[in-house]
Image (cartoon, rainbow, N blue to C red; front, side):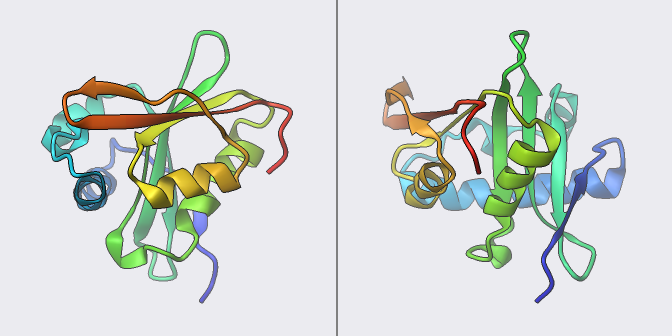
Length: 160
């Protein structure tokens, strides 16, 4: 199987936005099961709300040209980057797509910058991914009853 191609996504394009929305919903539904919390904000977000977010987007395109996964981030005023979402279509799980997207962000898109990200603390695959890629785990926090989140930071000098 050929390695997915990573490229920027434009959510002004209707088909791209619809694919991102569909993949995000499916991916977050799996996370909700993993962490035992179905109140993940992205699960109740409309397509219009998703498109209004001030995010930058990268997509992983499979051999068929379709989007297999995506990563979205915001640039902070201090120059750091906050990963807002990293989603892979469930049919493409366990193929290295999330790693590929995150490595591309770290080495090609925003090299040498501090990166932060959060995930459900019980989301073992995501926690493992951030650990493998050199993110340091910060304090866990609970933004809502029944939800424990893990925070991660990767310093700019760390290698991928």
